[in-house]
Amino acid sequence: MHFFKDRGFAHPLPSEVTPPAVYAQRRALLRQWAAGGVGTALAGWAGRDALAQGSRPGKLAPLPGARSAVAGATTMEKPTAYADVTTYNNFYEFGTDKADPAKNAGSLKTRPWTVVVEGEVRKPGTYDIESLLKLAPMEERIYRLRCVEGWSMVVPWVGYSVSELIKRVEPTGNARFVQFVTLADRAQMPGLRSSVLQWPYVEGLRMDEAMHPLSLLSFGLYGEVLPNQNGAPVRLVVPWKYGFKSGKSIVKIRFVDKQPKTSWEEAAPSEYGFYSNVNPGVDHPRWSQATERRIGEDGLFAKKRPTLMFNGYEAQVGQLYAGMDLKKLF
Ligand SMILES: Nc1nc2c(c(=O)[nH]1)N[C@H]1C(S)=C(S)[C@@H](COP(=O)(O)O)O[C@H]1N2
Ligand SMILES: [Mo]
Image (cartoon, rainbow, N blue to C red; front, side):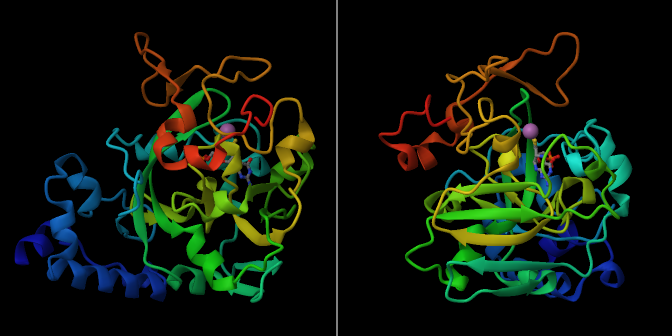
């Protein structure tokens, strides 16, 4: 007990900068550690010790998550450096250059923040971010993220399955798809002046995809709350789909009966389909999707990595697409 406490949380608790919900969760996690629950799960996970036991970047408020029990939720691949995860971004609302979001997203106001849940649900409503943080236990999940542009990262996210929220709002029999709407505020987002995409940035999933335990509602990464450029205060992460399906800074979740429009589909329907499952066998019309460049491995002699079917999550999600022509429904 003493051992874990010393190794894991020797640093002071920055309760001043920590939202109360997060603080309470952290206390709960400490108690779990003391009881041995989390400690046992982490034993033998040497490569992840620094990450799991509290040596965090120390940039933002802590948001710990217990190691997820969801199948496939923890890749053993080395996480991409925090500096890369937070400075090489796609978040067009803050500019189209990879460095723009880190430079410009300081203007994003993440409090107060609400997420509206509407449409085909028995319990629609407006959720305050503080109540969302408390909705379900936080888990750490180490996912591969594959951008449609041909690069990838490994990110230790913190959050819980979107299904936790979906269960609570009780979808009706008509809810066949879920649309995720993200913030579009010209005052905070300089990128909205450009018409590269239609704003707000919208994305969508089929209901069974949204309900899959790997579909994550993420509030943090590297044991701290999300940096603005990564989609604070809450974003989606769907690890078997190209990165653009994972909408950032979500303000509305809408349950609908018809397949909803998505921003990328509207922009270029022949290039970006609704499904956008990672698939090395289905090329983008303008480039191959067979390989990828792992961010942080871009030295002179760095080899490209083969892209994996469903980004390596085929065992978990392949069944969702049984019988579908993945070339047509790309
Ligand atoms: N609102 C919004 N969400 C977004 C984007 C965006 O431009 N706006 N870009 C997407 C793309 S293309 C990718 S690859 C991922 C990148 O997430 P990351 O910057 O946290 O790695 O966010 C996705 N979510
Ligand atoms: Mo992307």
